[in-house]
Amino acid sequence: MKKTKRYIGFDLGAESGRCVVGTLKDEELLLREIYRFATPSLLYNGHLYWDILAVVQEMEKGLKAARENFGDRFDGVSVDTWGVDYVLMDAEERLLGYPYHYRDDRTDGMIEAAFKIVPQPELYEKTGIQFNRINTLYQLLAEKGQKLNLLETAAHLLLIPDFLLFVLSGVKKAEYTIVSTTNLADPYTRDWHWVLMKKFGLPRRLFPEVIEPGTLLGSLQEDLAKRTGLHSDTPVIAGAGHDTAAAVASIPFESDHCGFLSSGTWSLMGVERPEPLLTPKSLAYNFTNEGGVAGTIRFLKNIMGLWPVQECRRAWELDGKKIGYPDLEKMASENGSAKSWIDVDDGRFLKAGHMPEKIVAFLKETGQPYKKEAGWLTRCVLESLAFKYRTTLRELEEVTGQSLERLHAVGGGIQNGLLNQLTADAIGREVVAGPVEGAAAGNIGMQAIAKGDIRSLPELRKIVRRSFELKTYTPRNSGYFQENEQNFLKILAGRK
Image (cartoon, rainbow, N blue to C red; front, side):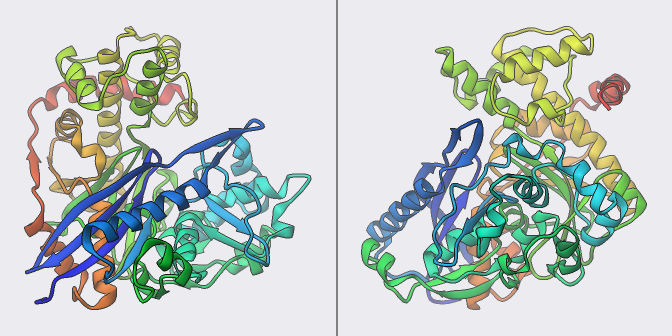
């Protein structure tokens, strides 16, 4: 790795997207965010959509910013995003409307509808995926139930990162890490589960060829290259399309006895495995087998993350109280223990709007004391998350038979030092935090592996360890979580 290599990575989350340039030189990776933009949603006629065309325009601005800062030659460009959502196009590659947002309520009742066609145990046996109403399968069943079923008109279905890679390259493929979030993939063949598709009546023509992460798709489309000033021979690479897969690719695990926590709008806790794990116990605990890079499986549970805090902040801002995340963390820290908790995975918290009121309503229903101050509510959510991590880690160890020595946390959520400390206290293990831009590091790293500039996944992780600051949190107050665990479990049991 003598010659300096530069890659462009787009890392898109539920709140914002980032255009990051990664420079690989002398066995180190330097990331520089050169453009940040909102990933806006639209509420129209009672339904929630992604403004995907606004995202495309912002990505073009990101490419221009890359050229302005680093010149016109790059060794690759790739995209990672959230999972499950998709774009439909007709035979002439025209959009059939805006893509639905996974928080839209059209999937209410669709899990139960799916189980009438394929029983729950069989569906889990075939896909190994956690049952969550946001999954692509349930979105497609909701679409089939519409008077105007767009699946009959559509010629192509592309998941969000695959669509954005299509915009860049003109090539339509389905990268496996993002495909695995659909509830329609076979974790053993790492392909679409065609038998399952047939049972659900989903048209085979919609679904493109599945490719492995780290696949070269082609080059930047010529008209896009002209508009942005980049060379048209810039490689477009399907790295790890799912942001969590990209983040996990970047984790410099110290041993095989280390779990991961991808911390952000969502929290995803699990372990990396060489093969899927599908057992009655993993089904009972609702664990998922999502695709990882280099042939791996991310065995994990999807937990609500910092979304309730994000929504509280938005609600307070609408009330004229603009409070930054660092200030909220400080207020929550100064508040002291909340001693009241919510089930962050309660269905009411999934949808946008009125989050402070929803939290208070939950606490009232469960007979717990509450306050309405921002610091207290934030502390309540953070402690509730930490408790959920505690119970999930116990389940994870029980299902896998592994004893985990520490938890490695990545993602934007680790900027909240209070949450990191509460997590260490709750699980009674060390929490190693970093890198913050784990998904971007994995995005860039997978491009470098695809181009042969990094030889392997273990080499990428060594480079990440050398390149980024990691911070270790040791347990300080585990007694608080031990003493209150039964009360928290009663709250969870009362909501089922």
